Length: 276
Length: 237
Image (cartoon, rainbow over all chains, first blue to last red; front, side):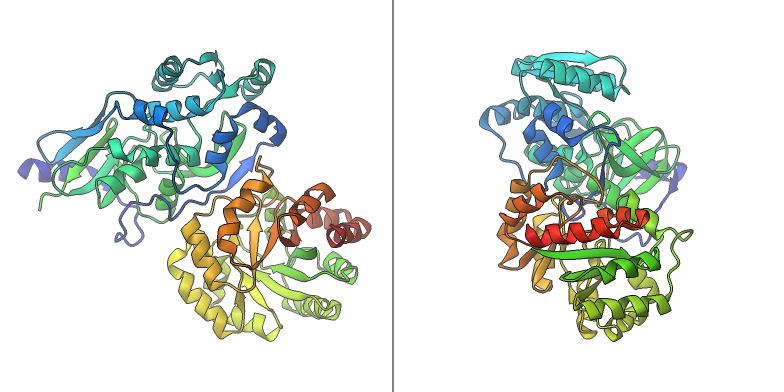
């Protein structure tokens, strides 16, 4: 308890709550986002280069996804569990969290898939998912080159996969709620590094019944137009410490002041047990 | 089908009046009240809210509303919740006194859900119908709540914001709204301007077509001929 109190006191917490009373969880209440088409990419091209299922998952509200048996079998191999004995516990996963986003997208795509070069977790995940599902993958080195990936996808008949697909990501993470192991005791707060896929936060928060939600970062969130789907579309979200927050529920929670900011360096996701 | 035409109040009153004069058979006008942050509008409509070009004036409004009444069209306000919050019941009284039929508040159930029932009740007190506003990414529960609180028509935005083109299929959008429509009229809006799309929407129970961004472009170019053609196209579809 003493350690816990000292830990909290030492941290500089900037709370951006308006009323401070609302819990930081929301999976479907605040789901509507504003999407912008790219100025120079036609919807026809978007339809050609993304799997129709992924477009549907991304652009039409779906309460839930019926996970096909073979996909469910792959997901069930994994567990998301918290470890630690004290009041602060850490989320562990056998694979990077972004693997689940890669897995779903690769599953719903055609035989040939193509992606822009993103961070190591994404590349590892998308290659693993491709190997599991027997897909051929092509990587475009320049991560900002939307025109090149579109051109190559059209030429080769490939489907683009991308780590930032806000609504689909939320849907995929909701579908894997069953592999999250609820830790013992009541959880008062989830703290996450803005580099983690933010779509997991609402489902994690709901599953473990956390009362609050905090981003560990040096800066504060700034409203931004976030490029998604390999830069073919945009969505209203936030940028913090160079990372995107694009999940609809998290964006909505930030707007409503239901997310706190803690000026601290934390890697991954941790949870604080209620010490009461 | 029935034409529903959007104008932002304050944006080029002179042209709005010219267009209303050519609005025979327009079923309803949606009059947008300018705001600093029209978040669910696309870039072209956002510009019409900009104080540097928007000369909102209640005397001009009176004339515009009178002309709309002479055409015999219904009148609906389209205002963001912030407008209602800042002006309070004065704006509801204003709408009531000017013979408005109802109000579309696009961000109410998205960003101000806690104020939903209170707002619907306030509208009712001023004899204004709440118009449900849904898009393809509106959660089903929110859609149900809105439709049950609304009147005889639903505004179905084809896109999450106006003036954008995303690769939706009409079939999927219809499948999203139909189970919840409960026999109410569906008015499709956002990014619709060609006859092919309108004819297709007619097959999906469309009661009306709402046009906004296309009308702003015509206002900017002073093109009353194209405006009338657009209205005729909707009527024929």
